[in-house]
Length: 398
Ligand code: PMP
Image (cartoon, rainbow, N blue to C red; front, side):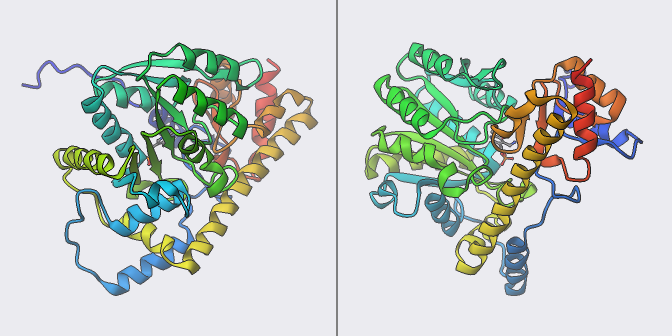
């Protein structure tokens, strides 16, 4: 049966890490990843997570199945984080949240749901976007188109282009939006721009699908979640939010995410939730216990929540310091044109480096970045900043 199976190409970013691992140079740096590393180049194990883990281990609870839509303490805490403590949507029963296998699982379950409910819709994603967006919505059966997002000349958002493209979409089109810390560009919308986009979505009857994989990685939990609240306040009665704790809790391998559907009233929302549960049941039946118990445990304890908040703040402040340091060092070397790195948000920066320059970074300096020029700022450290800045300067000067 498997004699003539076509070989499909591997994930280019994972391939990059393999090449990095095989590189013997001690000064090598991997900026190709999508992971937050600490100053010592390690994936942090947050103190709040460690404490709840010890507590749970001491309790030695049995591992029964979770409900299809996950641990209730987890989905309830998630709603408060994503929609805000006093959210009217939550109070009126208009949000249904299911625990999913990471943010990726939320995207796929959400995509399957929409394909069932809106089979003829098209999905519009930003150009560029996280590569898996196109793949996930395509695999769910959608035609995927893109809307203008990034301006290569200014290294920031092309807001006029974005608005013009959104205006051209057919009513009923699903619009995938990054809530904050846009991957791969780092270019985000400000409050006034979100308000304008929300008004347009409502006016043109477009369906918002918000992907929030980095809440708390730019300005804080509250501010980074503003897109969700602005879209709700615009009076859009149905939308979806996929969120992930992979980065904000540094729990990548635990696969902790959630899918929240917002409906026009409590009864319709319950009906949509029943559809979500049926989809989950036929893919993986129910999610896993451990990661959700960790997140719910931290968010459910005032003390641990405070500790986590401080640790999350430390992660984002370290990213800000690395951005500032990079810009400063490049300017000192004579390359002031990289100032935009400080305006971009989150883990990633579209550095503006060409494929040829990225190749030189790898070949001459052992610095690995994605061919598009995307670098993971969170994989820099104060120890390698001088080395990377000098290398970027060198390749940018031919
Ligand atoms: N959306 C975006 C924009 C992402 O960058 C990522 C992770 N790289 C995800 C979703 C998926 O998150 P998870 O790892 O939790 O599946």
